[in-house]
Image (tube, rainbow, N blue to C red):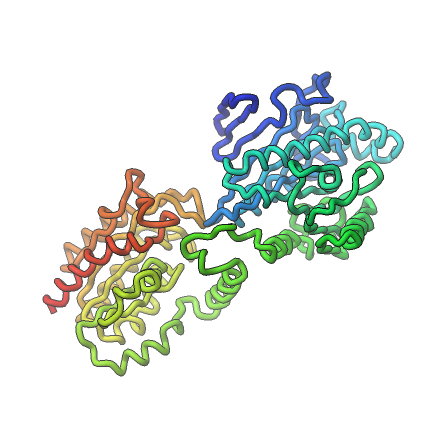
Length: 525
């Protein structure tokens, strides 16, 4: 169970759940519902077949930080649906937030005020009530303005605290499902500069006279999704949003699925609606919202579209050429025509590949051959070791590998299996009369593309194993780790931009260390 710590922050009460914070939207009782005395509840088993929250008295935002390899600076406020009586807190809330978080988006799950439930079966209660439209409408009418106010307060809070969450204040979106989609549209059409979302995503939303307001003249792109077989007959409402947005000269994209029903959220039904959120990501990416506004490091010379193209190419290659045997095929043929003289092959992953890209001068003018491939693990390197190292007839090979194995890039790996693959490469080199330099794995506190794996101590243990092998086998061990580690056993911030890959300053630390080892190895030949 997670520990709960209440921290008074001026007028805002913040409850910390690990990395996720729950923020109260109002300092005291929420305006308009001061007399509400009932307690919020949650029901995981119900007729909706998904967990719901009900009897919300104290509106909150729960922060789900960006957890990809980079922060896009984009934020999305997510309003779950539930007919203004419940909130489908997972399939239309946290599941969506965590999916978007992995894309570098900071998400805020909104719990807005809803109609009071009189039993502990809120889903059943609302289903029965929906059969009486007059009763249903009468119950929702006084609560709906409060839900809108909560939505407007949510946008204002995120914008006012953008710097705190590393968010661009002009990249704040609002997404809502069903009743949450109604809130999305009402917020958009009743907002001002301080609380107006920059883009919206109403998902199978209900819209009607209750929303009020006019379509803003400010450009607010809309991504709209629904299913034609919506049991509540709301497909036409999504079409209406699209038509109204287009008529107003706004940017809109509509996805209308033939099947999916109402409330599909992130539920898996084995039908096309299962992938609607991927289309949302495409839409965000096309608008630059999945790329930092001021990219740094390697990102400064790339963009989201190029990254996606490379991902597709890597995925295709992963299935058709798992070890990337063809990557250096043409270049290897050219090197075969050159007489080897003090030739050194650098075998590794992105740290080796990036070395040549960031400091190409280190490899120029000498027979220093870079055979690094980004993302690779030691079994992949072992498969291509003959053609990319042995067949080049070098005097020395520099092995730098293992961190991607620890990250699980090609599946689970033990330290023993990583060690064994590196030793196998070393033994193959020795059998071919190639001197071996074994590099320590660089320090790594966490993986930005796969956080939470706690690699730091694993790196320490693997390096001990590699150093001991080098001493026993007569190989040369290069200790980059000790020269680059910080007090957390991570990479020093000054030596890398993402905690894993060295920058130019990092490579300048590594170069004299490996150069000394290379000269020693060549003299021993």
